[in-house]
Image (cartoon, rainbow, N blue to C red; front, top):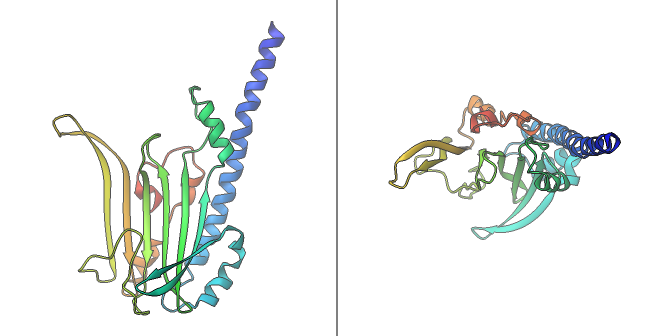
Length: 234
């Protein structure tokens, strides 16, 4: 009986340790890759960096690239995407099967992504986002999104979350979150899923541009959930 219990305990320990070790290894690798990409992107400037220059700088990340083309105002826009998740499909699947356990064996789901748009041989705009699940089962994550736009190529600046406001003067920022209400429509005090959106163009100050790219990638490797968008991007 004692041998059976011991064998069962060892098997369970191995079952829990394997995904945990894999998760930690993958998350730290992805964070390292994301940090290298972020450092490279900081050296690119929409409107002045050519497509050839950008692709040369981004060549070390070619294995992570996804590409597509789209039409914008009758102009072909070449798009390149990079996605860095902090987990793997198999660990997420295993965690789902072991959700009855009183402890979490995987990191909070987190993603860092970069999108670059090219027009007529130049980098037209860049979009960076870091997001992490707020509450398990909630459809919206905590997120911080930045669009760095250029007006020099004759296109209407556009980010994935809409056109800049009418009074846009080089920098804008707005936030939203999800709140809980009772049956009478009164706020319950519960809030989650904080999202912040930043847009900058050539008129932004160096400080505004630097702050907009100050992503805190430690959320990719921490078991302590980043509770709101300010922990993703101060």
